[in-house]
Amino acid sequence: MSALAPIPITVFTGFLGAGKTSVILSLLPQLPKDYKVVLLKNEFGDVEVDSKLAEQSSLTAVSEILNGCMCCVLVGQMQTALLEIRDKFRPDRIIIECSGSAFPATLAFQIRELERETKGDFKLDAIVTVVDAENFAGYEDTSPTAKMQSSYTDIILINKWEHVSERALDYVLDHLNTLNDLTPKIHCDGRNGVDPNLIFGLESRLFLDKVDHLAPTSHNNEVETITLYRGPFERHPRHNHTHGHPNDDCHHCVETAPEKRLAIADRDVARADLVSALGLLSKESIWRVKGFVRLEAEGVHILNWAFGRFDLTLLAKQEEGKETIRLTVMGERGEVKRAIRKLSTALDVEVV
Image (cartoon, rainbow, N blue to C red; front, side, top):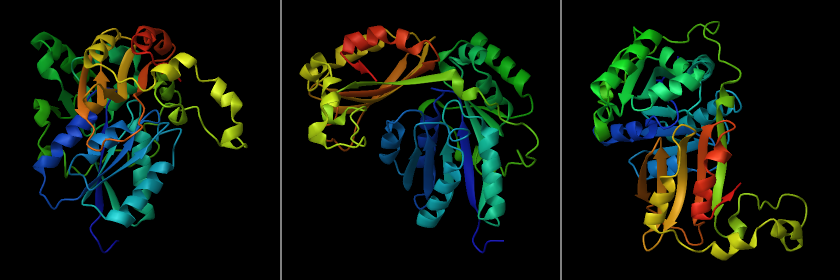
């Protein structure tokens, strides 16, 4: 057994747009000032949006695993990241925020394995599932993973319940009880989130037996991810000079950049135009839009859109030469490119 107390790990799951990041950030002001928390976040795409938000909080550190789901495509990276966090920070707690389509069992099994390999230096404290009461009825029908997230968890946090009628909330609770009638269900207090005493120190007994609850192999196919871009050519997502020739000889790369895109690359976005464009999105096909937008006379903002609602947060550290628009869009597989066509035209962005 390790001489030091084990590092508790709290895993947050929940479908795209459920509000996991907001709930996590709401916990921090309620903790003692000397309590060290490190966030390990996994997300689709290559845009470190939530990490930028988290860096503006009181977290000790933020680590992000991008471009895939660490419960399947990126299996193994989570364990490596946890060991690095332990060696560098030795925090009082590690919070893992999963991608919206992650199945918690695979992650829990990896943590259980790490518990054994490190002789108790880590411990799985709890799996917490955040449910979006406003949109649960919609994505429950299309996502088997959303059902599994609510079925295999230590506690369910019901978020955004204040935006729905009493009847609609009863419908959500009925469905959750059908999936999992034994797990406690707690209503989040709006922007104040939830009391950390309710979700820390649970000492989860889930997934001690690796035979049970095997993860589905196709859950990642539920979500399609694309990037929308407008900005300097040298920062273009496809402008990658690892293909074996000097930058000056990269004629075919230059030819792939449409002249229209280059002409408007440095034009900032009016807030009213952005709001109007976002209003063109269908929340049935598009579930999340997150990234960076440079607004006229306001600087670079973090955009966080989910199921028709959005926040714009000023980026604390403004960067010169940053792209005007760089957004990751997530939605129903096979429908995303069609569903964002009007938005792309309105904002003059390129679909990458």
